[in-house]
Amino acid sequence: MDLGLKGRIAVVTGGTSGIGLACVEVLLQEGADVAFCGRNEERLAKVAEDFAKRHGAVRILAKTCDVTKPQEVAAFADAVAGWRPQLDLLINNAGQGRVSTFASTTDDEWRAELDLKFFSQVLPIRAFRPMLDKSDAGSILAVNSLLALQPEPHMVCTSAARAGVQNLLKSLSVECAPKIRVNSVLLGLIESGQWERRFEARADKSQSRDAWLAELAKSKHIPLGRLGKPDEVARAIVFLASPVAAYVTGAALEISGGISRFI
Image (tube, rainbow, N blue to C red; front, side, top):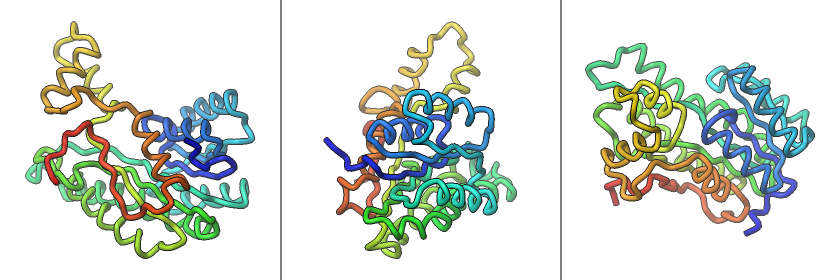
């Protein structure tokens, strides 16, 4: 299927690892030019070099940026505006979960989590919206978690923040219409850096990575029997953000291997 992305311009936040990195790859494969950011300058440079070798340096723009800092987001937006005269897609992908209960979460941790989850969406959308308004296929895709609709008792703070973000995105899908579509994905357990770190910290050092992941999927009662992979998520994201999904806005696509229990 042709997703209609040839010649389109996309921005991906958190684009140097995991799902963000996979999104940049899929977008480039589909013919879009991509600007992406990350906080780690060394990792950003390595990723940019790899993409430049395989897809051409002219098709990418890589900038260091902390998406919770207004000045850095504004500078990133200015760089994109100077790089290309248009913007068609914004994929917001930043932040990971905080494991904590209500009793164990301090006030500072609450503030940090709410700041990260909300402003990693608010600041890029605010900065890039004027450029998206000029597109004939403006699209915002936010990466969110299944926790927004199915909270976990050991992730109370993150669950609450994710739910608030989902409410915000639904509101924006109305406010930004008809020029810009706003959609999201709700993720279950996806292979990522945080699971790699937990694997390295496992008690049974004789257990292989595949065996550990299979046991994890079983313990979490995932019907498909495994964790998702970043490229599987990326393909769904790029489809939903692309012109092919032109009549979809305000939607939340669950990508969880069937783990949800709500209707």
